[in-house]
Image (spheres, rainbow, N blue to C red):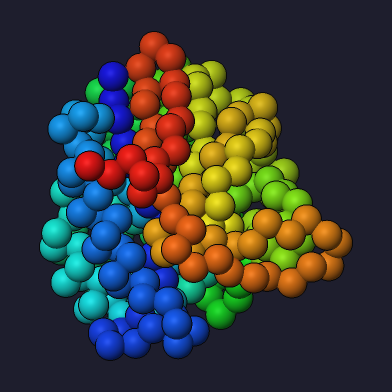
Length: 260
């Protein structure tokens, strides 16, 4: 059994600043990491912590420096993918010493664990809120999946490939790409997709594969399913996800009420 914790949408600000002047995203992340640390004895062993994008709000060096200080208390080895609020080069500098970070190009990575291979896919479109998979990323994914025949795969990407019904978020979702769908359909092993971006636990299917969207660590997007509704935030609405992979696969929501 291989267990992987997922957190998402940290939106860390430079030290001393609050998101929208009201939300202390740094304090929320510290609380999340402390809660997960306390929970590990009853849910472990856990192999990895993955951050599924929007590590920072501003994409600036000050925000990544602040995040680096906070993540020193992470209870597990961790990896990350960029979200639309991140800067690819600033993030590359932030994690330059980590062996999972590519030297250039899209921030795509692979790690082979006992029961599953985890993949990180870069959906960042610099300067835009929506996401897309470039030809370079899809070429990398194609070659990687060919090398992983019959192998279970868990793909992390920031922008979900499914619509959520929250129109403000769907407008800035992932640009559809038929090649991505074909690659997932053609893989002869189990595939799961884990995303962020929406700050709310949502499940769905894409290309016949299960999709899980994780909550954020400090605030949620409001559940307004009316057409053309705007985006609102709910401070304090947070959580994490655990992917439990073996002969069967489970995805479990972790809330602050679970913390010891």
